[in-house]
Length: 191
Image 1 (cartoon, rainbow, N blue to C red):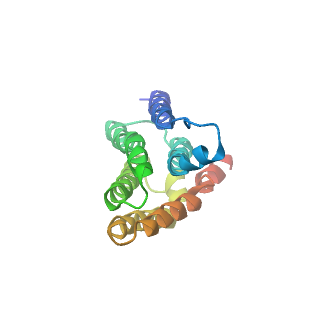
Image 2: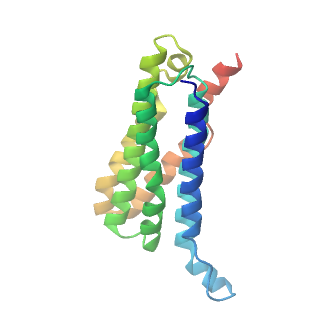
Image 3: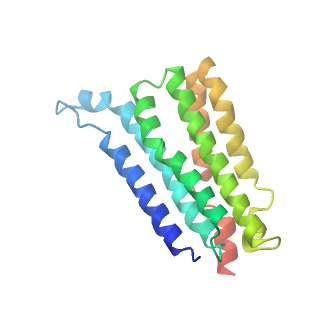
């Protein structure tokens, strides 16, 4: 099977997730800065989650450049990733209610961790299908950024019960690490 349908479906699901997240933002009830300031936690949560979804979308685009044909296990691994991405709006809405609460912060970290695991599974399925020496194999290498991300998300879950702000710092740190699209694939595709 060609990859066009997988790309189109994934783009659609990601677009819906982003749309749902923005619909959770409510306009202030007053026309002053104090009312806008009160919405800061909601806006910051939205921005962070938007960045995470954008990171997945951008890197998913690059990842699919390495795929020649889509197999059933790649389809299911991709659906697994999309499942976790579609939970971002729920987690974003919940964590924006109060960043200092442990359970919403831990759940946000858990969903980010599961999305990262799903990414790792998708990447592994593609690597298995494309084989050693493939474009993706050359690009991924030891995948240090992927492993650091998994560790950061995993650490954020227990930290949410100790100091939720530390989890928030971990979320931002991982996002900053990935803010620039993964150039490893992009560089090899141009060669």
